[in-house]
Amino acid sequence: MAAIEVERHRGRLAALAIAVVVIALGVPLWWKTTETYRAWLPVTQINQLAQLQLQLSVEVEVVFSRGTLTAEHQKKIDPTHTRLEEHTVDETTGLSYRYETRYRTATIMEEDALNQPTAAEADQSLHLLSESPCGSVVIYVVPESSTLLPEGVSVYVGQRRTALLRAGRPMRVGVGLKEVLAHLETQVQQVLKVMSFSHSDITAALSDRVRLDYSSREGLADSMRAFKSSPGYEITFSLLNPDPVSHHLHWDIEAAVQSYIQPLLSKLAPVADFSLDSQILYYAVLGVNPRYDSSLNAYTLNADSLSHVINPVEARLGSSAASSNPVLNFLLYVPDARHSPLYITDHRKYTVASNAFSSPRWGGIMVYNVNGTEIPVDINIDMTRVMGVFLAQLRLMLGVQSSAPPPGFLVGPCGPAGLADWELDRLLWSRSVENVATATTTITSLAQLLDQIGNIVINDNIAEQVSAAVASLQLAVGQLEAGNLGLALQYSKEAILQSERAFFDPSLLHLLYFPDDQKFAIYIPLFLPMCVPILLSLLKMAAEARQRRRERQDKKD
Figure 1 (cartoon, rainbow, N blue to C red):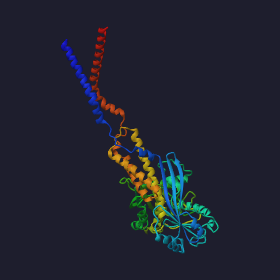
Figure 2: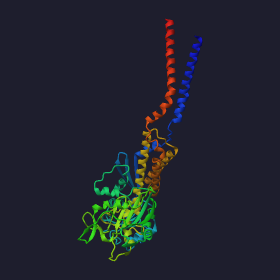
Figure 3: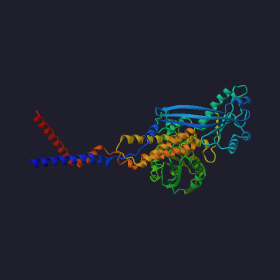
Figure 4: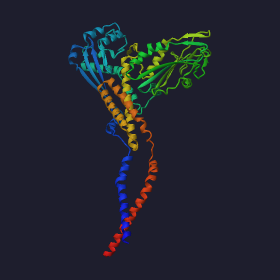
């Protein structure tokens, strides 16, 4: 009996030792070696970005020329003035616009520049004197009797960041300074909405973050016409020749691109990188049969059928899978002899002057009719006419605003680059805000995803990208508040690249949909055979201990 009792005691100690080793050493070791590694993320800063409060600061300089202010007004006027506008977009997004206005009188050299015969020459002379920084606006106030502005024109907007404003009647002698500045402030606000940004432009740039209510179908179409902000764009020019036997087409696309397109893209270099290519497609048709119009003695494509033109043509354009950047397609179509001439008509059945149309976020198509009855016909395409149309379509696709100016405004020519400096500034304001909105949405969505699914591994490189994106976003917001538009765009581009690189990291995907039942299916066959004997031994030991305790209690009684 003693030997049996000793053996039982030894078995109990062995079982207890195994249980202690499993519970005290095995379970913590297994827990540590199988836990999901999650690097630290700046959650506090991300939550702050989720409540986005953007402030856009604009430097405005108002220069009074001779004869616009009295000597008494010049002594009393405050050299600086700050105006703040605040707007609430939704419960998580707010906007404020800060206009820092500085008043001064024109210098002698500026007075000489304002004595030029035309406003365009004055604008060029003022630019040679000094160049305004990106995002700023300089407004020169000229006397009401000045012949610099044509009759009926109150504001001239030049190629640079300069505007000429005709002084109104309230700025005459005998009018108080308060009334003068109040009338001037109204005119300055109109100029800033044209040359800098408007509230509608900025709210449209927040479309990735907030839900916008478009009051009209035209407003929705305008918002969808331009491509979304991207670090790069691919631009393809294609010549479609459906009848190469009859039409021998020659187009000097390389020279045309260098003369008309490249100056614009060079000026847009801060916005994105651009790559260009061209191709000629033979026997390529539009896929829509035009209708003959006896009143025009020509074939026509109406506006309702234009939507069916894109898909058949796009199949011949080649794949853009080699690049993740958006592709802008510009097609020049020369109709065959059986359907020539061919004109595009609008919804009112009137022919379109450019004989071209554009498709939102895709590109544009121009129909080029050929004169000549003898076949075959050698044709040298007029690239000046073609590139004029493509340049206007390219501006729309890239988001360059081309809205009609307010009454009394005269907008000067864009210059050889096809883009005025103030138009570039408008685009930079919109792109910076759009990048900030997109990056904050991406980062906050990623943080919510990682918080909801706890078994996703967060590697150090993802944490570094998220931290870098948050830092770039904070810098972009700070530069917008400081009015440094160029730096704000640069930091916002870095933020959107880093945030998307983190969001689409492959290491997040393979554990994204890893349910808990798969864990049980893996671990139960491993732990169940080992845990059952240990658990039964512990239960038996507990039962024996209770039995001995009862026996001792009975002996005492």
